[in-house]
Image (cartoon, rainbow, N blue to C red; front, side, top):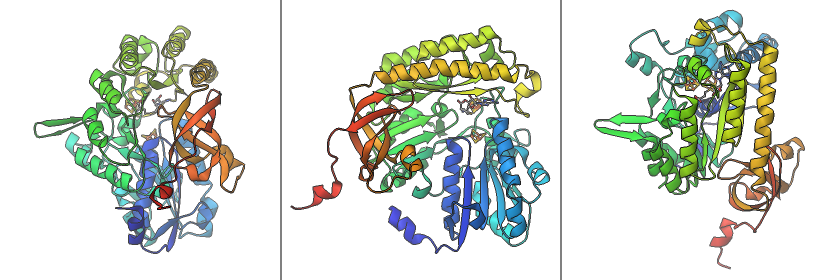
Length: 485
Ligand code: SAH
Ligand code: SF4
Ligand code: F3S
């Protein structure tokens, strides 16, 4: 279905929705889905909470800080709610699943609390709240509250519609292939908030990718908490991520395929060879290591050793030379000694990641780690380790980017850069931004018309996080090709 067909099926806008999203790509995608569903009930999007008929916060529980911020933002809505009690205020996402009714106790003027496995009910719950039924709660079964099948059913994947306006850009879209997680790393709340690991049916995924391609999408990013563990069993047929990649690769219009987040143990030779052999698959792999110490990895219950991780890096470098690998790390996990932390620094030095996301350990009630270990690393030590690791990583980012100096690389143009937006640049000539196939960010002085194209950009200068370039050839304007001049 084309974008215009979707638009013509929508009712006139009679109400306004304000939605704020934090957390991972899963949440970004969930918000897109909820917006698409609410558009069908006559909602438009406003950027101003004061103008909204419904306000939704899509929340994250992965660290305490994110939750505290969400509660603070909710408290700030009190005046708006007092001034207009008809305004519906909803909390969705992982914090909704984790805190459930406690949200109503802490913030009594919240009207709905909806976990990530129940998002399909949001339009109905908003309507109920508008009809006067307050404190609507829709959450999935907790991991101890039923059979695995019942729990799985209560965590429904919600992928009904696509909404190009809610995407990072119209040319890029997330596509969920897996929900939940069964790895139970001891620090992590995700298996509790997102439920058991479940792969989506391949035919649904492929159908959705075709819709996205029809809507003009050039890059799809497949999402799963451990995306490379994806498997779907139907009768005696098992579909793995590599099978999916081969099917998605045949879809016209899709030019780039990425998948996040990977689990080190499941980064098989077969998957890597598939990525190598399919030119649309980006040579970019996000595979969090979390720590460089075997003792810490064991306490985290990550299920691999540093030797396994190094062997995986060797496999990647052998099969896909120049692949960009990125990672996540937690510093200051329970009992982490200075020596154990230095092993993480060593791992970062040896692996030379494209980039790393570094987090200070935040104890999460409800996890095994919170139950059995003491959160004994002082905040200032966590902070210092964070800074030290970041400095090592930043230097590597710069050195790796230097390799691009003077080269010309194909860039998928995303649109005006953040700088351009901040500077409120108008007109056609703007600073534009895009990414290399290996996920590096490039900016240049360009034209808004370039958005959505894949253009050759010459890299003139580099910093740790951004490369600066020049578009090398004039882009091909598709209309021009069809003109009979
Ligand atoms: N499924 C992904 C990551 C999900 S959470 C994976 O397994 O890699 C994203 C990142 O947040 C994790 O990789 C981890 O580095 C970090 N994280 C998770 N729980 C955390 C906690 N309790 N404190 C600090 N960081 C945490
Ligand atoms: Fe959390 Fe571990 Fe699952 Fe990732 S693999 S979501 S870190 S439990
Ligand atoms: Fe946060 Fe939930 Fe994602 S806890 S990181 S929004 S899966």
